[in-house]
Amino acid sequence: MSDPAPDRLTRALALIDAANARDPAGQAEPYGRRMSEALAAFRPDAPEALKIAARAQHIERWTIPRASYPEGRIAYLTWRKDLQKLHARRAGEIMAQCGYSDDEIARTAALLKKERLKQDADAQTLEDVICLVFLRYEAEPFIARHDDEKVRDILAKTARKMSAAGLCAAAQVPMGERLARLLGEALRG
Image (cartoon, rainbow, N blue to C red):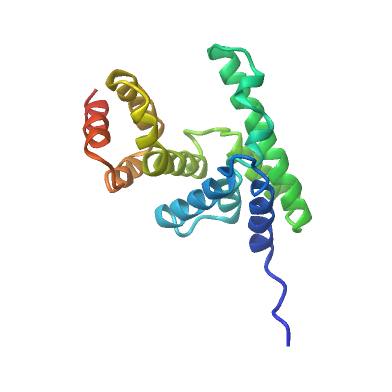
């Protein structure tokens, strides 16, 4: 007797992983898995739309490189919005392939586009998880390349995006002495 077909969530996550496995830098797939792991730890009862949004947070991000936009804040924000649209579109295509309804696809798209961030608990959870993954996996290499003032500024901006629950979870993230010190300074303002 063969195994039953995987459920639609399992199929959707596998298709996202397959898309991310094509990243020439090899970063997208591990990032997606880290997002899922962090979400499972932070909010084990997360709805499917949020689970998919977490895994698809950077789906095929490498296809729109930052270098294809001019320098400056406005261009950076345009790039970020274009990435959100890409992530929402690709997640939606995968979800449709796996049998999700238009409403479920729209919900995941809204999360990936960070619509109603401060009014939507799931959108805030996604933002918390993004910040937690940054602190756990990306902050140490980032701070090695920047001075204390720049790091404090970035950490303060990161903390402002987080909920109280997210900040409590951040306090549990293992980190080196410099990162812990700078995060503490950023939180104290």
